[in-house]
Image (cartoon, rainbow, N blue to C red; front, side, top):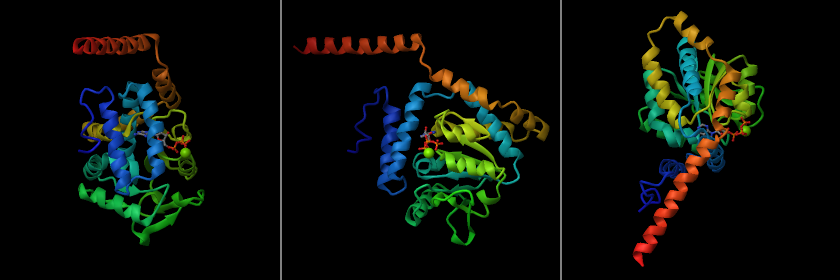
Length: 275
Ligand code: ATP
Ligand code: MG
């Protein structure tokens, strides 16, 4: 029996624990970097504060992101190990449905890992995965580490780039190259969240399916309608709204305390009944 199977279904953190185990499996398969496990921890702490749900401002940011992608000439979705371990199937579906290529772009790059990620995405049917073919390897001038490598058919010449669990240096480099950056990042104060043009403060496990849903909903809109959706996005108020949601209210603390105290009482009863 795996760790994943022994998690009790009624555990209040069951979903988040399952995700942790999926990432650990991704690490064991060589898809996730060890630092990716820690990056996930940073993200899930913010998700806990957010209430593990898509707040309205994040929904609106996701809609503006889709409208930007529909208006883009050369959009691309950058993917890494964590994103692949958790969402390979949904990413393949989104990419095939929208025609937007996926580009494997790793902070801790190794040939072995990028090929494993490619295989995982292809296993779920992804038809257009860039970033691995060395014939198309290009470099971003503004970056020194291994993440400077990009695909000349993808990020190098893209006008709109979606990044998730991205590093701040790279986001800023993409901005300096005049690309429109859409970030999915649970930390509204990360350099990535601040530097992107559109930031979706939400978990990738909710955002990736939502991007596909909204795409189906608005793909026939006129350019004018799409531009209006893009223009309705306000960066500062989106980030502030996420922070406001994370500031736990008295009401929320009281409700959670009540729940925990109730569980302690139930356990007391169980112990008493056993005696
Ligand atoms: P930056 O380099 O942008 O300043 P950072 O150094 O604080 O950010 P990194 O480790 O570079 O953080 O990037 C990981 C980011 O991904 C963090 O901001 C974290 O909150 C976010 N993150 C982790 N897991 C998820 C997830 N499942 N969904 C969305 N965001 C996530
Ligand atoms: Mg960083």
